[in-house]
Length: 93
Image 1 (cartoon, rainbow, N blue to C red):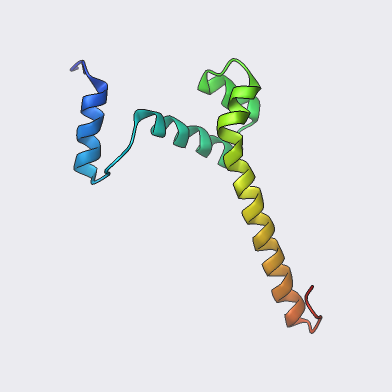
Image 2 (cartoon, rainbow, N blue to C red):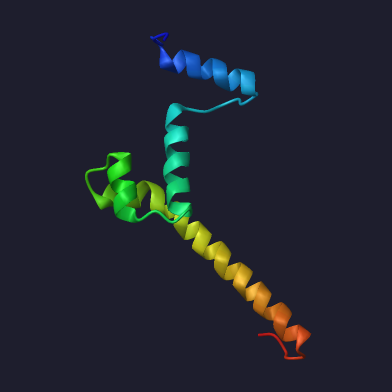
């Protein structure tokens, strides 16, 4: 097993080979934590797995993404309701 002495430099090489112009190792962490939330893990479990000592840190940096999902879900629901109302001959709001 080879020890990587400079993880940042190796990561930059990986990004370049993948055709990604900008990124950090922290981006991988953010993506993982965001996916945990998106797939239903509890806030407590995410906090523990991510190594945060308080919910405040988890909320500040990662739950803001969930707010965006809630807003998009509201828009999608409203659009779907309007389509159903038109289909049934009810004037949409």
